[in-house]
Structures are given as C-alpha cells and as structure tokens.
Amino acid sequence: MDNNKFNLKEIINATGFRFNKNLGQNFLTDTNLLDAIVVDAGVTANDIIVEIGTGAGTLTRSLAKIAKKVYSFELDQNLIPILDLTLKGIENVEVIFRDVLKMKDSELAEIVGGNFKVVANLPYYITTPIIMRFLESSLPIESLTIMVQKEVADRFVAKPQTKEYAAITLAIEMCGKAIITRAVNRTMFFPSPNVDSAVVRIDIEKGKVEENIFCTVKKLVHSAFAMRRKTLENNISATFGISKAEASERMIRAGIKPMTRGEALNLEDYKNLAKEFK
Image (cartoon, rainbow, N blue to C red; front, side, top):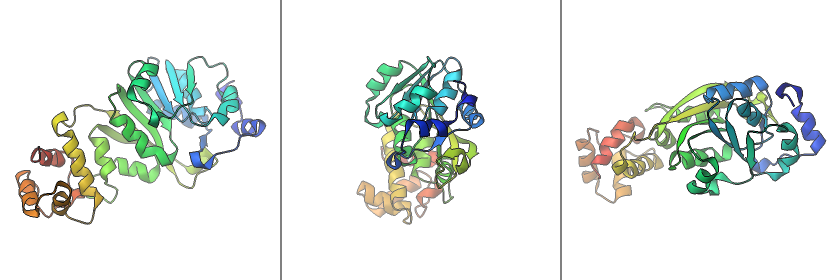
C-alpha cells in the first residue's frame, strides 16, 4: 500500500475504530508533512528509530521508508486492525504494545540494541514525562524529535527573563539542545485538536553538566521555579533549609545578586551556584 494511495478516514470507518479521548489520539495524515518530520529528525538508512505512539501508523510508514528499523510503541490494541492495513508489507517495523514509561532502561536496551533516535507524535498529556524519561536515562539516545503543543514548544526553547522560560527549559538544556523545526496547524490532524502544534528536535549532548553537580543543579532549578514570584534567595533558603543570609552569601560567591529571580539565570549560572552547594 503506497502512502499516497490510502485514505485513513476510510480505513478508520471500515474498521469501526473509535477514538479514545483519554489517550489523546490525533493522527497525522498529510504525507508531505510526515516525510518532512522524518527529515527534521535527521533519519538516515543506518538509524534505529524508537517511535512513541504508533497511532494509525502514518508517521511509522514515513520513518520506515528511510530508517533501518523502527520499533514503535503503542498502548491501544484497538488500533491493530488499522495497523494491519496501514503497515501491511512493511518489513522493518515492529509494533510493541507496551507503555514506555513503565519500562526499565534495560528492557528497552534489550529490544533496541544500540544507539537510536526517538521520533514521536506524542499525546500531549505525556509530553513532559516522555521527554524526561529519555533525557535522564542511561540509554544511548542520539536525539528526540517530537510533536508538541505550540506553547509547550516555545517553552522548550525559551530564553531567560521571558514568560516562557521554565524549569523544563533548563531540564532540556542540561542534557541537550532544542530547536523548533516547524509549526503545524491543528487542521493537519484527524481529528483536529484544539491547539496548534510544533515539531521540536532535541539533540542529546552528554556531559553539559558535570555528574558531581547534576542533581544539585536539578534541585536548584526546581526550587527556583516552584515559587516563581519569590526571589531565588527565598526559594533556596526554603528548599535547602538554610538561612536567607547563607543563601545570599552563596549566591554572591557564585556571582549572582541575592534579589535575583530564578528565571533570570541561565544554565551556567545554575552550575556555578550548584558548586557552592556541593
């Protein structure tokens, strides 16, 4: 079955599939867009791909045209009749009906084998858990290319002292570099969601934060954005159980003014501050 010669809506109707709102099912159907996402992900003929959310298999098909192998993880077994049609005859795809969030790194590694890239049209309600699950894993991941809500994409690539800048911005920056590769209008999905989307690619960069301060940087970032309206001095005092005077002193030693708020600091600032808590 050629990508351009099947009508997903007809297949869905023919199989009697019913969308599960709890799983955030919104399928992409435009072949040009699907192929463009594969390009955005930098997929080559030597790549192993882990896809999160097989859905109707439309992105899976585009990935399989280029990649060496696609391991696609899906929760909804009601999609099997659709996938039997949309993935018919494609030999380099393996659909696995398991929850990646509940799998150990060792289980994933046993399936995938070596280095891989993650590509996903994610259900929006699991965007952050999925990203953090892979960013903080020990798995040999090269990159994550994911479809997310446009406002969430803006948060991923935000700069300090903007309203979009958040803990997730820094969490991503600690492990890699994020860029928005394209905007995607809500009308490109079936059924259409209530928001526009964007494709984000995160290239993994191990070692951006030294291992001996990694956990402290995470704790500082969480502290800074947990109570965003308070100064970093107050948040550090509450989180680390030290006086405001001591928090202030450590900030000064790190080259940070005591009355600064967390959203004003970049990753290097947090690294410097973490060294004062080591």
